Amino acid sequence: MKRVVLYISDKCPHSREAQKYLDNNGIKYRLTNAKMQRGRKELDAIGASSLPALKIGNEVMIGWNLNNFKKLYADD
Image (cartoon, rainbow, N blue to C red; front, side, top):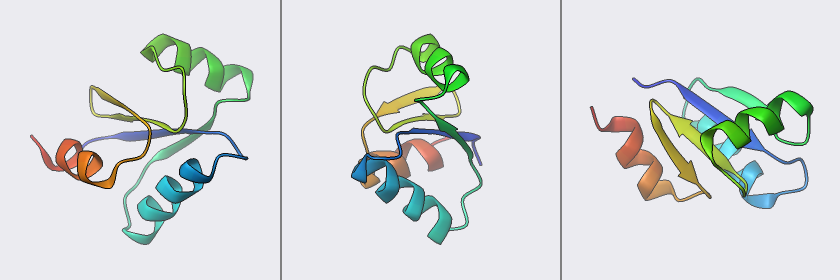
């Protein structure tokens, strides 16, 4: 499966929803807080300006949409 990076903000309910889905489904991911300097730098580098943002393989998904996530994660 593809490598997943989840960019979040602690106060964002959609970030928590995405994180909960990944955790509940045993999907391994790297969690990055966009409020920290490193997280902000990475977020800027992928061209994302809102949260949550996910990097799934080489694709970037802005916002949390379960159907889009499933398609990007499973699509090889």
